[in-house]
Every structure is written in structure tokens, then in C-alpha cells.
Length: 81
Image (cartoon, rainbow, N blue to C red; front, side, top):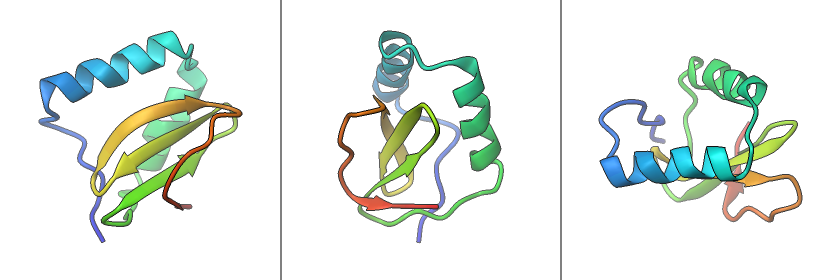
């Protein structure tokens, strides 16, 4: 199982993630929770996956985070802990 890539992200993907954070009003508290989770070096499926947080859901595919969803939006893939 891959680990989440945390550096050298493609510039277009990084820009998209920053836009989603801004557009969906992801709080600093939620980003800290994400950072804490990432610090554990979680393994994720090689396919689509998602991780739920109290106020958002992080979605990814293999070792890449691909978007952030608000509560109520439906993620696709396998839920990771």
C-alpha cells in the first residue's frame, strides 16, 4: 500500500488543493488535524480512498490527495482510518 506523497506535488494539483481549501472554507483546525494524520505516515489503497475528519473529508487516489470535500458531499473509494 502506498504512503501519501507530501512533497514535489505537481503544481496544478497543488493549486487545485489550495483553491478547494479556500472555496470550501476549510479551517486551520482541520488542516492541523490533516497534518497530524499525515505525520503518522498512513498507508492508503492504490485506488481511490477518503479520510473523514470532523468538518471535512480528504479524498485521494493512490499516494496523492486529490481534493477536499465539505460535510454532506459524498466521497468515492475506500474509507481509511
